Length: 588
Image 1 (cartoon, helix red, strand yellow):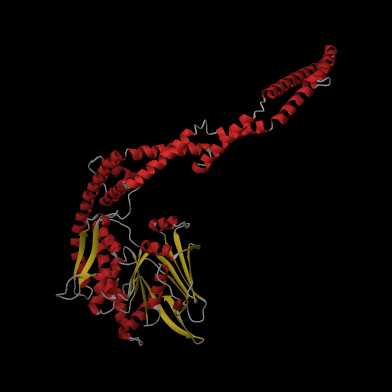
Image 2 (cartoon, rainbow, N blue to C red; image 1 turned 90 degrees about the horizontal axis):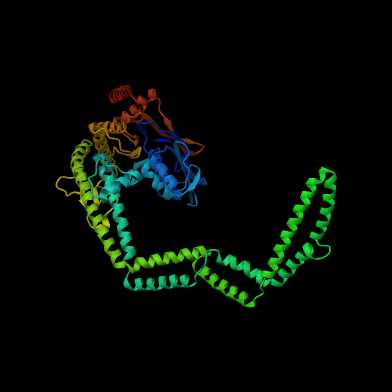
């Protein structure tokens, strides 16, 4: 639901705020007061095109913003685009400078017009005089029919998709599964099988090139006979030793000499000291522990001395070995430059090349299996897509009868049809089936049926949309189903070319639709205005030589006066006031 709409320096609006409520929100006022400008501002927030001429004369920029209650679908769009969801509301803001540049913010985070357009179907659908924003395109028409038919719009959950997948592949009968979820899963299965086949079915020249490449890569890595993924580190350590053999030998033997060999060696000094400490310990027990410490130190010196002596004797200053190590390291570095940063990655690359080679060398068998899988998934998809077509076709026959009756109640005389055409060529297969759903209309007797957007004017389009929405909602209500659609519907100038009883019928239909969804409606007719749950008066005033547009929600006691004005013009008579009060009473 749209909670609030603000516009600053937008067209003739300097600062306007409207807080909308549930049900039917009506906007009335004199011609040119700016009612449709508010609808245009909302359209801009839903991704409409912006131009610099929307900036109020003398201002640097126009700013429009609104607050919607969030929906699950809207939150999914925000998460996909990396925008934080904050609480239960979504704040949209758009700025347009006098130079034509613009900025978009969602929940006070920078965004793009593209994200606004993704959000639009989840939040609102605007039917303006000259266009249908959020577009009553083929997808919208299919969605409306699917809602009437009780066909879900969302893809199955991961768990449901896996359950359906298992049943489809095992050819088991599906139980209690939505036909839409089944088609979605069947489509995913088919696309996966096609991608697997396309990956295998490269041309013969490419296949031979890949065989040569992977064979060379596998052989080069295998011929290197890598000992372990740490071989290069071990060789680097040995290289450092061989490159510094003389220094290491001198250091080891020097340490051995100081610890054990010369006359002032540590071992000799510790032996002498131990004799003295042992003598002390014979007479005073407190030196017993000290004697043990000296003995341990002497043993440690002996161990270290033996270790460095053995190390020195093991040093082999072999130039041949050093050359061999450097050659080996160069060979390993070459492999790492080509196949991975480490030897472990090189070995893994070799395994992957071997797997690819095995797969491509067994190409004929793999291709046969892939083609078989594609054929199976094609058959599955065609079966379930045909089931979906039958459900839609049956629903279309019911919807077109209801909608035609509803449309003709709104001062129109039309023939109406909902056409479901199966496009069975694979380029038309989608996760929603292969059906092209289109609303056709003939507004004059004897004229052929044509697509709605090619015939209907702005006012007629709004009335047709109203009739369709009411028909769908009545069908949903009778079957006690609840399938989410945009919560806010906006109708601008829905009353063009009608009056009297037709206008009253439009108002009644808007009221019926508003019991399920929030409606915003711009109207000039008192018969429609009387049905509103909230009534907003748009008026123009002049202050300081500038025109200002004001928006005011009318309290119940002021509504008869505004409706009387709509009935009689600038002068409100006692008769028109009584008539307005009677209309309000009847509408309730």
